[in-house]
Amino acid sequence: MKLGYPSFWRNASSRRKRMYFFIFIFVVAVLVTVAGAFVPLSNQESQQILNTLNQTLTQDQAKGALAASIFTNNFSLCLGMFIPLAGAFFGLFVLFNTGVALGAEIRIESTGNIPGGVASIQPSTAVFVLTLIAAVFLLEYVSYSIGIGESIWLFRRLMQRRWRELRNAGILIGICAALLVAGALLETWLINAGY
Image (tube, rainbow, N blue to C red; front, side):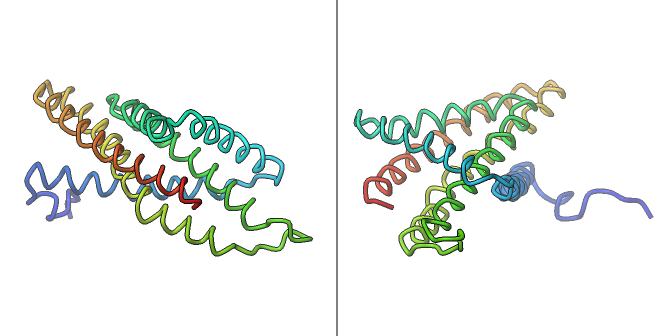
């Protein structure tokens, strides 16, 4: 019995294959972030990560440049993910570290000041996490998945000397920029609303 690509892949157009690939990368990106969230950290390490994030957030809010700062940070990371092949590894590293930071925040929020560190999540934290996953998370992770996926796709096409892929990469970068602008505006709104 000969092993090969599944029929849904063999029968798919190039555009459909690209979509399947980006969906696969999205799932991998989420799994890598979840893995990062389970990295064991002490309460002190978690608090240190949270303090660094809060300090950056406070400084950007004070300057009135929170949305611009969020967009600049996310877009520069996303651009790095487009680098042929190396961008995929960079992207997974970034997403793993994002998971570590998320895990630190969840640990600090869930333990609070309860003696013995018994976990209890405040309703405001639950709303924040759900809103983040439903909106900002989706916009950012779709962008990062496109960047990581195109990194691999671009590497393969350039090895085949199919230079037209550079135009596709440019279009995808534009799409990611639009998604990340929307994500930055929404994230800024959520932060300013106190979530």
